[in-house]
Image 1 (cartoon, helix red, strand yellow):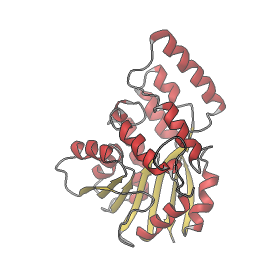
Image 2 (cartoon, rainbow, N blue to C red; image 1 turned 135 degrees about the vertical axis):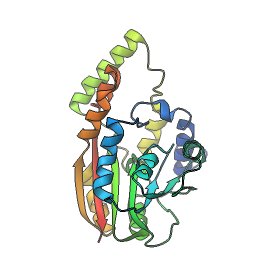
Image 3 (cartoon, rainbow, N blue to C red; image 1 turned 90 degrees about the vertical axis):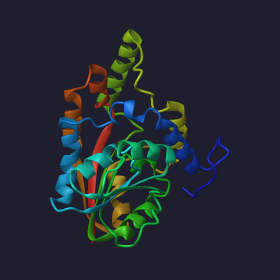
Image 4 (cartoon, one colour; image 1 turned 60 degrees about the vertical axis):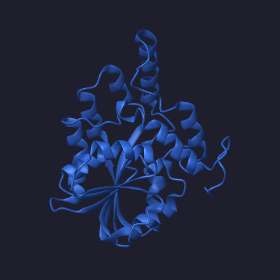
Length: 262
């Protein structure tokens, strides 16, 4: 991606992404899979963080923090968090949610060019960011730059372009339920048409798989690039979900990746 103008809009792709997520801020916490309720689901999201960060307080940079759901989980583990987002609307929600907390700051910045100091952080954490990077190689180089030697990266993501074979069946069942009982009022469909147009313009718009990311991370200087299963989080999400949301956990391939600054 060369930063070229976004087709169908009067501004470039990154501005369309900012506008899209700002719009989503109004309903983001209502949608299943975005809000992280306390209990089994929060514990499942925190497990990889505990494994990565250990017990001693760390300085963590959270990228694309959105409304601050993952922010809470990192902060609750006792770490100092700088939470960054490209959308002021998202940050407004996150700041209100976490008002008055110590060891926590929010900044408006680009996750692909953070402008943070060299060698400043022990770890970087993000959820559902990598698929939307416009310049992934540049982003990974910047993440490498801001980490201390030995610093770690943890990200949660998935292939949002192509459902799994089982996922197609799940989508069909969800559509049947929608027709029978009505659409889920708390599920906005991710502004489907707009989301699809953005995806078509992204490097990972046709799908994001771990094998696509690994060489880019290694080229940026990261070592110990490891894939971890997302299944424990999906299982935890299903424990308290209705049938429609249980099916949603089956639609796409999701994964967790970690790596280390060599």
